Image 1 (cartoon, rainbow, N blue to C red):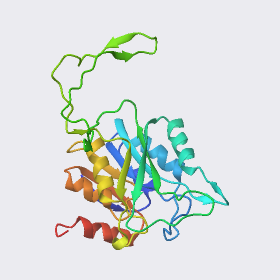
Image 2 (cartoon, helix red, strand yellow; image 1 turned 180 degrees about the vertical axis):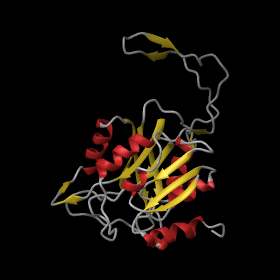
Image 3 (cartoon, rainbow, N blue to C red; image 1 turned 180 degrees about the horizontal axis):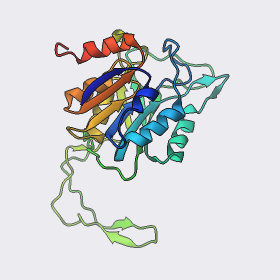
Image 4 (cartoon, rainbow, N blue to C red; image 1 turned 45 degrees about the vertical axis):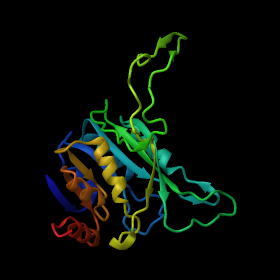
Length: 256
């Protein structure tokens, strides 16, 4: 299924069958930090629909941040994360997107400049798919892995290192950590807060397989859908703005 739907995501998701979505990747509007042309969203209603339609073992990647109002962060991101847990999701990982920018971030008078967003990874039950990205350069690549000793368990018992005395060596690249440093999306596509393509692609590669169905219920300019298509996933995108629907269709056209 490859579908772009113009409509309210809360209404349109009600038409999606139970347990039919492998992965959700989206960044909702939060704290009125961007102008979304007056559109608002029912967070709790959307979260409940996501729990219904996501398959057992499926994943929701929820990219969100917080505004600072009168010197205090709203905490919207954490409130949403706790609600996801309340309705039955597991909080599998709290990842950080450290935004790499082309322009200098100005200094603030009373706090350090915020240059990150949370990427909450929720799972419905036990995680089904994890394809870790291995692009972290190992400084000790080529050296033997094994060392004498072992791992100390919580009860104090020492478990011998199974690699000690073997010829195993460290690979050139290791598994990426959960802080991702990615250049921010360009606004040339007409959206006030576009996803970076690399961020969307890396999540899709990490948490889904070819042939899986990826949903973005607030599709914006369609970056999630574009990266799903590129990597041989099925996709469903829901977007309430006709202007953004036109942008999505253009980005998904064969000429792009």
